[in-house]
Image 1: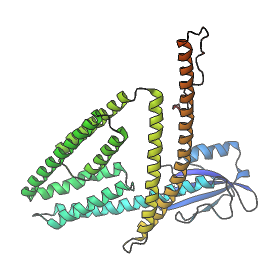
Image 2 (image 1 turned 90 degrees about the vertical axis):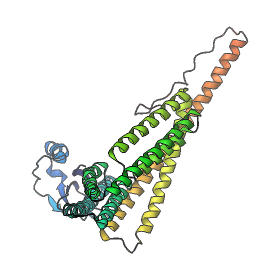
Image 3 (image 1 turned 180 degrees about the vertical axis):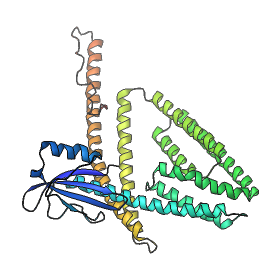
Image 4 (image 1 turned 180 degrees about the horizontal axis):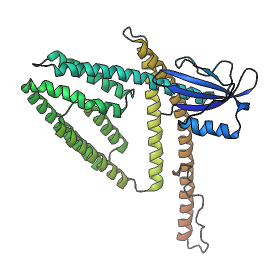
Length: 374
């Protein structure tokens, strides 16, 4: 995540200023340098925009004022400054606040993990309480991963440590180890059978979107269970093979490019609508969560930031959904015109007409700026 950025503004005296923001993650604060625009020539402005922003050292000119706005305040843009880039500043503020809060949350989990490791190292016999504590810790970490407060890379960093604690516990209770292996194998076999059923449904040309949704849900469900290494590897391979098989069947089934594109756009609209509904449900969930009597101050701040980010995301998704619907409507009209022209061409040919119907130019598939078909 970029820790520096700049924006332009106008102060209360209608003088242009450059706002240079820097996140001091270790100090849990933000430095804001207010630089008079007139004190920066073209060369100095380029050094600030391209050099300092990317981490280079920079000597701020005379007249620069340094302030430290509160990251969890309503805005890090000073009240006496107007800026057309307020939206950009607000987005960066939300990103930084979210980063700092999740970092602090993650640090608290690392401290808790160290305490669990210390207890595991001192074991002389099986400790059911340690098992319950380690299990509770892992479930809470997974819950935050589900809510995307913790990255997969961070999760991977502690996975081996958590597994080591369970392995140490298993050495003191071999019977539980046997039960674990049996449960892991049973879960693997059950999910393998379910994946085979999904493949059979693909053979019957069912709704491929529904199949992939079911596969995704099954994968999310499988991640809630702790498996042996061999079972985990085998099940992952089975998931990958099932996904590949369903995709191949779908590609074979939808061989017409225009028809495929129409279906894809329709699915995109459904997914985006579903995603919007989930986001809105998440907003309702966040609102209810703030009323919990057990909520901590740090978690309350995190909810506030996540709520702001959700609002921004919803607005962006609604705009994109509108564009996708317009694209689909345009493609359907193109397809309709192409079908009419093709029908007219076939009709003339059947009647033995000498005049040839021109190849329609309007049926060419338009491209978006990103190179995708519209």
